[in-house]
Length: 525
Image 1 (tube, rainbow, N blue to C red):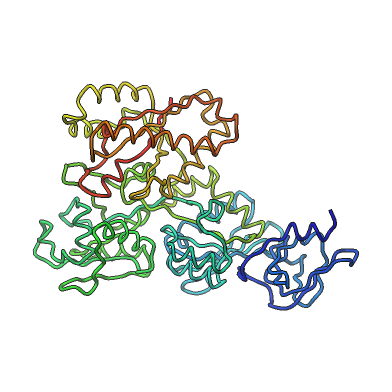
Image 2 (spheres, one colour):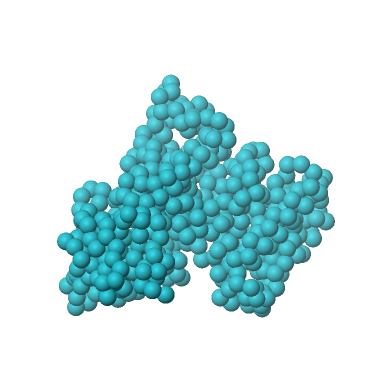
């Protein structure tokens, strides 16, 4: 293949977007024999590849096969990989710094933190005995909304989001040539968080229903007396309006009711905080306050348990978040544009999926994605709830058969749930498909049994729910196996079972409760 053909095969078309571009000046890339040349405006250089705006469009060209001529040509010998991350404050201030420092240790480099201003800081990664840094990772501490805006404005390379990308953001990204940010190689779940209602430590309230949380957000409840508390006005503390956690609260709690947050209603007192970590601190000092914060940022306040009318309750714990049993689980995302990042950035992103990185995530207060096995003896509350919820359609023989089938196994924290009103897996579950497929491919479950167990909500006839649960379990199994290279799953005994509505996790009287109950669990022996 000629150099020209190789260059154009290696090039791909992108939008006029790039993180940390070089000077916007013309350059010329020539083959060593001078027979072929490409001229245009240099958009970026990642230490290996040039991105150039040419008359053919935007091209990415392997730098090892060309000679660069022009005032904007980078000095390869002094090149420093630069990447800018922008987005949710909980990720930029806590999680990513911990991961960068962990990555630097694995690479035997020093991570030097430099504060640029109130909302910007960077890490220089420096090898021992070398004065010039190998990379600079800069962070913009802002909101999920602003993170996507920075990417579209060519002011960020990676978005840190505490919610999924919205349809309008996805459309703008595609129109800008950044690519479809919902594709598997453009987005990933980095860690797990949860939306947690909190009050001050001395507050008498210990639990609250999701219905009452929605009424608080909508401005319908403005006095604690309506919740069995003192006759005092409620102060509602929330992250900034552009925060992913704040938007998640509105999406999860208000959207099913067709309501909107009311900051100006009669007696309403909603206070927004630019940093998500400030919510719990403000609530901790406010005897009449209640707030929504992330699982990693509860202190110094106290979390409330979620309840339902049927008597079930669910608390935010590392295990209930990892299994998605807690209904307000909030995955934390990385979104990447359709362009090549520097090698050091790619190495860092690969590190974030490693086992050592999962330990760093857990120690940072967030919930990692490493699967854990939960013995049936540790699940007494779930099975007690099943007995309490038993009725004419789910009688004792069905519960006995389920218990006999599951007793020899342990439940994996890897679970699968679905988007509201859809058969499509939700974001965390789509990530779990890749994680479980990878574990099967690498031999983690060789010679063991994996049982895909389907469960349903209690709406409709029990027989129909059983069939639906079995179909969902089979669909999840097929999705996992489709992600495994042929032949590698033959070493694992894989089965499907369905138990319908026999093991409810929450009350069926709300959308969120039914969503929690519709799931596929993985049991292992």
